[in-house]
Image (tube, rainbow, N blue to C red; front, side, top):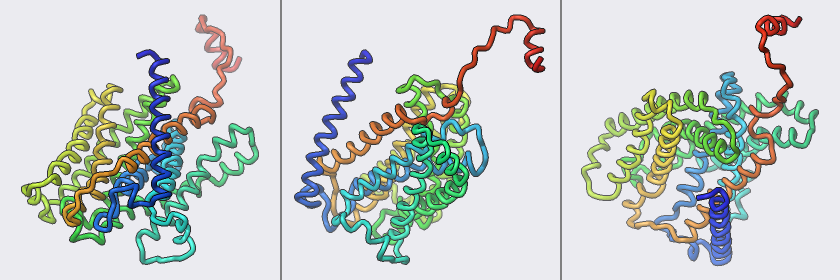
Length: 392
């Protein structure tokens, strides 16, 4: 497929997805949730919560992960991939906010938690943290805009106060990434034993860290292809080593928890749950084993494949928690309606589109900014090279 034909295909696909989603949006807000979803009183949460919110927040975790690595732990080698991670996170949280407008029965009341406080509610804490962290991501994203506009003084002022902002962002993200798991702690008799655990907040947080690293690798790969940039391969190799360890920690915690709760015996029960649990584990364990092998880490294509597998495993886990694990107790088999699927596809497609536009017009790839290439003479004479090095 030629580049022109490939471009035409993706542009046409994007237009079709957005047009279908536009009609689905009309159905949702004109006819209501009942007409636009297969949700019910018995099963009130579907993929708009399971994917658009739970997965969306997790897939946007690269922002706080890379910000902590570079600015708090002072590992400046990873600075080249911070800005793309911040952009991905900012877009992810904006799209999560848009998705909430579809999912809430009365979206015009989304501001109520900011005014009508209920500090005993986990959702209250999640709502506040997501709101504040989205504001923090905007401030972390703002320097790219200020650089583009040439506002040097404003950029300098923001840079001087950026470290406290980043620390606040990491704290807020830690709180709500774990609290998304806390939401399901009130369902000990309704959530399947393979996914219910007192450790859900910790498991959600650790999986979010791993997903943040994986999304950074995923974004770097596609950015290098889309913009003709050189892949930051040495950084990617290091990230894969860390990612393998984090996945290993997550899976170890998961199986120790299942063992101590006696939940592994439920794998003998008939039903879809055991197969989807197996799929989730395989999609995470295979890339972990791949990334522990040096030969895999030396192969960019293998790294990409492993990263995609892990991201699919992460999405499978979140959907298992929010959908699969609740079906048996509800007595309902939930299948998303076409309108639900079209809106979700539009969120993903629009995220890719906006990222591409922002990366094209803004200095997102900081490593390539402000690096003018001087006219350096060819140093054919060794003595002349040494004299230049001494400043003669």
